[in-house]
Image (spheres, rainbow, N blue to C red):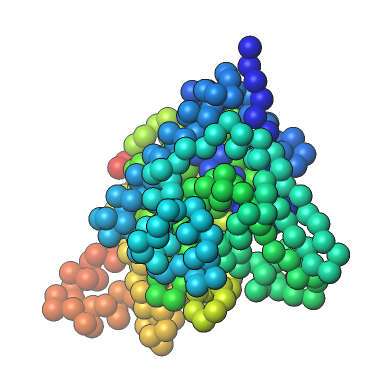
Length: 398
């Protein structure tokens, strides 16, 4: 006979809610889970037994710790120091804190994960209280929520519940909730770029679609083809927005186009991710930008493009990302990215993008090349294929 595990959803719009959704997207396929429901302010998991689920959950938490630990060891992701105010919470979770670095400590917490059956009861508790201030309590008020995932309090445009003009608020949580949310953070972390770090979240609409199909998890978390895996592997900052979306989208299509089953899932699920750029300078954490990553508006047209054309789009977008702030050169690549993007979503003319690519980008790069004819031939061959595929319906053969 199946049993039920209820996990409380933190307040709508909060980063901690998004961390929980990311973790639920990761674990919903474990053997003990039979069904997942979003019901009011709870996620309801129908499981073979609470004991079986606990065993699987602890195993998944330890797996996440191993994956992120290896990424740190291989310098795939960059760590940064825990905020001074958060050290007490981490020291409470660990017998000794051998380092001040955030993800190194999170990895240790996850590798040692051993939640109890009593912990599952704590996961049902999420409440708010307080007159002069708002306090959100998850399970118990033993620990403070790390500021690295509490940047809403500093950013009036995005924070809940009332922005900077509202009451002060804080979040307290039990050790079980701390472990769960740190697992969500480990899954969400893309990388650190200078003074900012980047987190990516599965939207709740996407989560609701994904949990209906056990094979859809690979669209998000597949070790090679998953969107979050590609974001981490490609290791580029998500700015400017349009070049970043073009770059990641072309990389996704290049990876999945020959995987028929995964491509079907990508088309059916239409996954949307929300990406936060968070500044960590000074004593506070502030949200620099929140952007959406959605491949679906131009997936059909990208699939018509040959792989070498996708690589051309990816190359130009990447040059734009890494020429940020370099004046006229940066402006050229931004304009080309915008024109390609508009052509892909159907509001711009592919020929206009092609003409601009040849007159502004190809000529600029040719002037600096030893073999300028080779550069011009390279761009010319790509723009011809680009126009032919989008304007005249040529189907890709690669």
